[in-house]
Length: 231
Length: 231
DNA sequence: TTAATAAATTGATTTGAATCAGTCTTTTTT
DNA sequence: AAAAAAGACTGATTCAAATCAATTTATTAA
Image 1 (tube, rainbow over the protein chains, first blue to last red):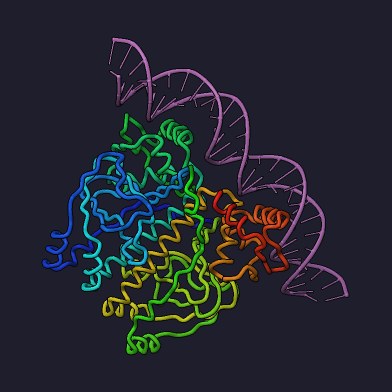
Image 2 (tube, chains in turn red, yellow, blue, orange):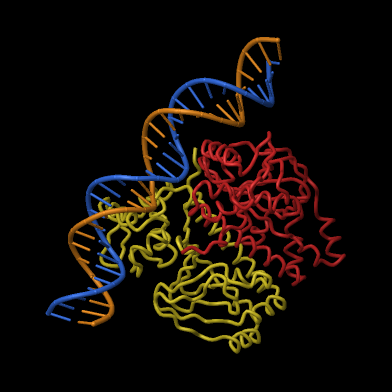
């Protein structure tokens, strides 16, 4: 028998970046003095795997994917919605190159904070350090789940998963506009573009969702949940 | 074109747990006063996903797998050789249940340290906190690589990968005794038992490795590396 | 020592999903 | 507005690897 409710969770979930709450007003000033806001256009590269990490990034507004790429295949590790951090895993001084690339899905605004300042505050402020540890831990959990789903679920389960994640966590509504191409959605869901298209069509036929242009509406949440669980 | 040398690395790599070097003698005393050594027999469960985390564990001697399980499928996230930590990802106070299970591959001895003490030291000792962050980061990187390999490499690439990992990182020798059943090896390599057996046989026929009972010898390192890279 | 059980192996079959190939549609460029 | 390019879609085919089925070998229990 299979424990349902395990690994049915969101595989692209966000963390709650409340670590900045723990900063003193002086530390906030320090950060503000050492950060810049940068705007990225849709499809612009935010960081490249292998590149030196000089900044911790905070998504002020937008949506981006974090992914691995070997020139042939792409694996989307997670997506970064508004309010999330990017580059935290590279905060370690030894490990100071990006382990992944990131690309803006839509026009985005990102605050870039000098990573040396962040490292300094980690040393000074143990509450902040603790929160960083918490965020890293919850990132791990999210990746573990996604890893499990990608390796053990069939395509319909993976797609149900992603639709629920988007609805529950990223957009927090049953109707949302997804500004991704079919290729991008396939990549995010871990399947080929053609398979994604066929499955989306099937989901619409089965009355699970409806699609109007770029807008997806979840029609039968419970059945989607069930499909996600059954894999 | 494909960037070789990416994601060819060890997918079951260990981290270097040197965080204890940063402790004061008083902190070491504190840890010793709040820890116990426990011996596990082969195949005994060390922790279960969902269980409360009360201890950080240090593998004094042995070998264990860390895995996710839904009652039907298993995914080995990493293996824990001598000198490695177990349970660090659950150090977060919010996230205080195990996100994975662990099982001893062989008879093992594990030091269990009261997690409250570790949390306290993280708050006190920023160098230690920094090292914990480093370990968590490098864990992430390792999981990212394994995730990529599992989703985009073919079985022969995954197997070459695991053999190289075992040889390079876990045992640091080209000849090692692997005390795993075929089923366990398949699980570790991310394939069915039958596929693993066929591939092992093929690797032996092709002169890449030789197998003598439980002992595996790497005969052609370069070719294995190549297979691992080509996927 | 034998019976029972578990693990390893081999071959045949099935299958999920990728790939290939081509058409239709929409968007962008000229 | 027409041409070009990119994206969406559909059907046919292929393929890697799982599953199924059966046998052999090794371990454990009686």
